[in-house]
Image 1 (tube, one colour):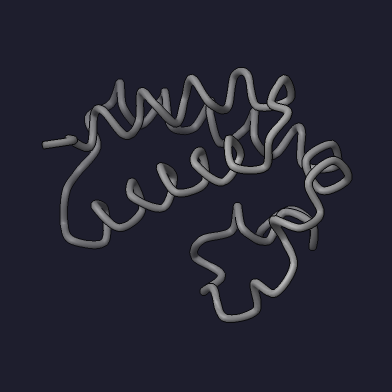
Image 2: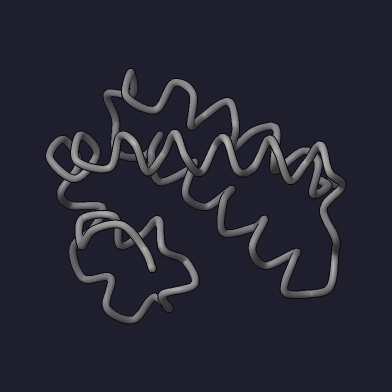
Length: 98
């Protein structure tokens, strides 16, 4: 069973290297892992201080490379209007989330 800690570790590593990815499926997998983190938090799981820090750094990295991802992988962001804004990484092409 994959734990919240596992998802955070996988996502953090992906965020670190995401600009090196060549396939859109690699970026999509990173986004799916980020989605699993949000889903776990919405179910009531809580982050430890360390997890919170790791997640914040990974999110910051993802936001920092937003223009690059939107340019290199435009198809990922197409037809995503049905995805709630809470999953902001699917909408990076629209700007930085509020």
